[in-house]
Length: 473
Image (cartoon, rainbow, N blue to C red; front, side):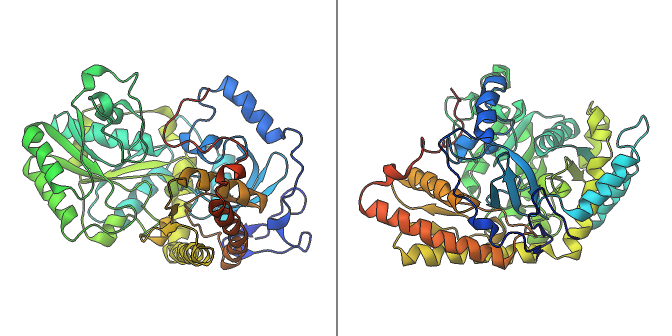
């Protein structure tokens, strides 16, 4: 399928490069005069006056990448290509929809299925049959699961899973290991004297607005820390409703660790919930726990499940899901038909195209480029040794944030949305990675030179990137 955006731009669909001969090198079209404010920046400045925080998602704030420089809005997104409101073209070598578009933006097969559902009506007084088909498909992929409830995003799905666990066990306390959303049940962990959630993804997640009465209902432990987990069991064992955690994120757990968590939770009458929102479908078709061989009581999915269309799912054993019948959990838009339709089309294509193998290959190429080019220019680059499907690196230097910000702004000039991590997709090709590596060579050379001369700050075109949650002024 050949798709063309305004201006006749070539589109990358399902990993294949479609060249229309209308623009030789899309990545090199960037040197645009910045002596006047762009449409993209003007809209964001206006948005910050209308929308508290500027955006609906912290991870999409321009300030998290390069304040005053990172483009806030897109006009079109296809494959792994993005055009901003001013027509500037970029390859997305960062989050790709914050991990939601594992097939790439506007995947034609998913779009076709969704368009058909919309044309036949996406909402009705009656229920969409696709939700039953999706429930069957998820239970077939995860044979341990027997029942499914749906939401429309990951945060909702985690909240649903925790509510069900509390209803099933008739207990209140939840043990947390990782990041699981913004809701009260989660941020209650920060109602104590310390920032208990620090290290669970973002520091500084203020619990202001969360009822103080929830203090002590959510307790944190660090992944791999058995002593910390045992301390929670010793103090709260007979009040513990559930343990919610990612089965893995960047690397495999130590042998037996997940079995230990499950067994100890069960010994205290608690349920184990695996959060597969980020790693699910990316490392293993279905959930990473299938690869690791440990079945939980419930598992939560979102992000890549719908390839950019809102859908979240909680799957579980019949016994674990029993509380869903005894607690009011209901929402109008959990019943629309687009989400389940997109998920069915996405799951089918993920398996057909063996996407897990492809994104592992792309991620490996990115890791190799960071290592090789960093070594070439003697730049203090530390590449994560974890899963290539969530490839990442860091600047191992006291000026790491300034280097990261400068790297991002320089890569924009070469036509790449780039940070220190990438969520590879089916739409990324070896050719695109090769173009990225060429730009990387130039930019790393600039950074190394600036570091040697003590002028990293001179490379910044605005303030350094924000780290963690920070109020916008």
